Image 1 (cartoon, rainbow, N blue to C red):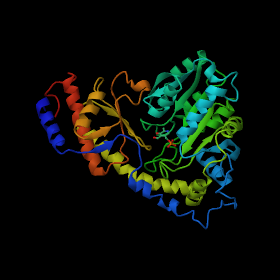
Image 2: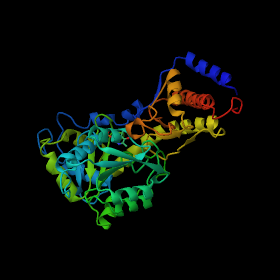
Image 3: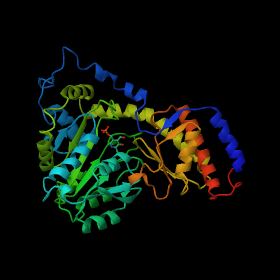
Image 4: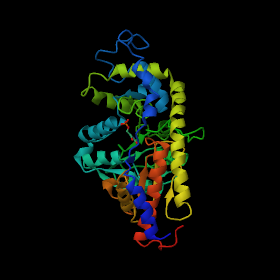
Length: 418
Ligand SMILES: Cc1ncc(COP(=O)(O)O)c(C=O)c1O
């Protein structure tokens, strides 16, 4: 097929004046509907906690006992003392931990992180909001590439061993944003045991997709806190999660887990910023799920809505680009994203062309610190929100745009593509 022929196909799509969005990992309306009962389980007559505690008033700084119990299982820590419940966003907790590290230092810091320039390791491609936190606080970001099992651990170990200004690493351990891939046991072991020049180094274990499986074929993670404890590094991980993509993205419950020392440190800081969290929302969530088994059952309903969307995205990639050698992509068992790599130098052009045809994609480069994908090749696809028909059209356009961009920059000749 020639460039002219591809371009005329493209013009046909453009003429449809589509408005499709595969840019953000948001739950669809049907997914949100799965949790509507949350809005009914607390009423004007019935709002006390399981144990009869008042939930409307101040108090309960680190969460209701029953919510901590639920999150103990969710975060896979061993006691409720290792849990603090937050507000509606785990991102707020991550931001606050970094902020307090800078102003006050961690529980085992010799001085506040902010006393000297600090750095974080940022596995790439990664989650743009992690990078934004670093940027916001002026933390230098060191990109380290990911393979199918997590970050390149040879590189990570080398870096942290010799540089005490490296204070943290961001990890999305399961069904990562954007690759959808999970850390192997070996990566968990190496992150837990590696020697760090900084004795107050932290792993930000953002397990945002801990229970977000697409089917029964699921990834299982080795327990990071247990592994760190066994290695004598109990204070290394902060484990984050939330119900943002389980119940309501804007009105869920978040939590953090870690060693009691870390949690006491966090509780100590929390005291100054709140007199207590939204316990009514905690009660709602406890009543809705009942226990962790209830949460797992609920997640199967999400999986049933998401799986056909992932399948459609993958099948169009395969049928349109599979034989061309132009692109590679991940095939996740869970999470919200598929990571697509187009030829070097083409990602921005593909995203731009898709936008011309009415398909909004995550900005090219967003999966790299400073928006700078050195190869200009990575594109994050988010299939959760559009309908299957919309995904079909959007992906046809993305694939067509990839072929056009590849021909334009001379990677392939006009007539090579079918
Ligand atoms: C890896 C990751 N962490 C955190 C979040 C945001 O979580 P929350 O809504 O709990 O702040 C997202 C949302 O896309 C995410 O992909």
